[in-house]
Image (cartoon, rainbow, N blue to C red; front, top):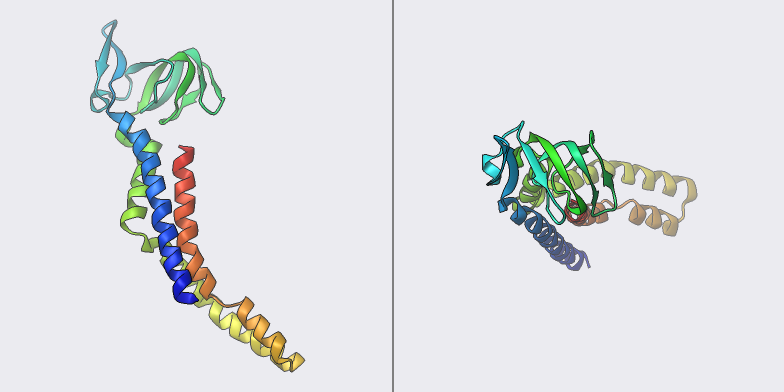
Length: 194
């Protein structure tokens, strides 16, 4: 049963990380699009790598914003239904459902929170054992407490069934098996929210 659960955990973890990776890829592919920037009074279409902090970028309906900055003018409705107005900060990964915005760039593509989340996802895919380490550390701390509690239950009750129930309920194995899948599922959900 333990081997079956372990194999199932690994399978679910791989599926979750793959789903998260696909979700981020859909957003990050849009990074390669050109950004409309006002320079010298003219609208120029620059690659994201050519945009610098302080530039004035213009976004219209349907654009995925690859930079972070302050809204200077315009008004828009983002996909989750959030309204954006002048003076508000705009996060990378925001998608304009309606309207248009002029934004003073504070952080460029590589420095945005979206980029940092993409790096975290890459680490999770390349090193899935990171979540396992904390789960195993938890399981190791739980083990002596479980044995102590089990011994106390047996001493006070002299009931083998109750003692066995406490031993099984406090077993650290399920935490070690479930935690990596929970970490990868949380990564997947986080990627879907971006």
